[in-house]
Image 1 (cartoon, rainbow, N blue to C red):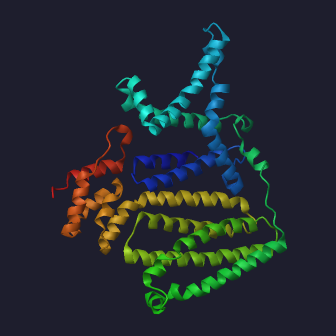
Image 2: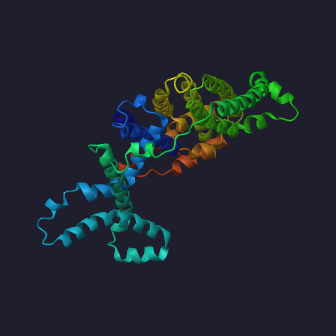
Image 3: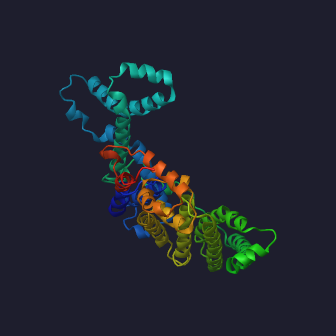
Length: 414
């Protein structure tokens, strides 16, 4: 757990993109699921997808509610309150400790929700606190989650945790498929996929000319329409393949393997559509991240064939998690926002408003390419760059923001 935790937590001090931050948060969740399984499954490569999910849910419950357990059971209130005269005073102290983070959370929400309440509250708070309380709220929230999570992961026995993963696994009904039902369903789905792939082969390998030759299609419609439907298909194939892996029938597993092969062809069609769309209209954040999701799903399904489908199901989950780690690390290295600037300017797909709206990750690349922009587009970008504001303070620092601040300082006045 430690290596991916340090790697992806450190990425927050590297990049500024909100979507990349979300990807890093998902990777951190995967790392936490590894830590949650350290006793119920000492070897992560032996854990099933259900055990990974149970570990993540267990750790999540511990993060949100584990601090209550920590304050109630683990803090040595007896030795801390020996100087107090009565047990009631000790109980009051414990209640105050429990109430403080709740007051901060609910108080912050009420202040944000109602202007009258906020005005009354501000009138009785010292003048310095209105600037400080948002920071205090964030610190209290992070401390609450961190204390609960660490208490849960560092428990000496699984029974001491708030909700052990094994308790979740044992209480979940297991899906059992009949061989005949599974084979019939998979054969029907395979036939549908085969028909779709046969139709798509003409467009997949025929190129632009074949698309334009069809009177019912324009090139833009072909590229744009259906991509997200194909993404949904790719996502839905994963649980079908995992369900087929629960049977002991060789026929069912062969049919599921055929479905994986056909799905990879469908994924290739989706990627081809996205490639056409990018060539015609340029890169955007959504196009990069959705493409990454399809590639990751393809890798996961390809990994499922030699593992989940053919006798080694416990190796599947760790491969999917590691593939997710690798994909997220690749995104951090590529720097999607800077890639968008480089690609779009090189191909002539310059939307100055969109390029200027990208995160600080894109600013150095955008400044470097200002001479390549047309005068009108350059004026729009320069104005947006000079109007960009950078938050101050050590807590808001990251490498991309510091580089962006230096780059903007070098931009001449329009």
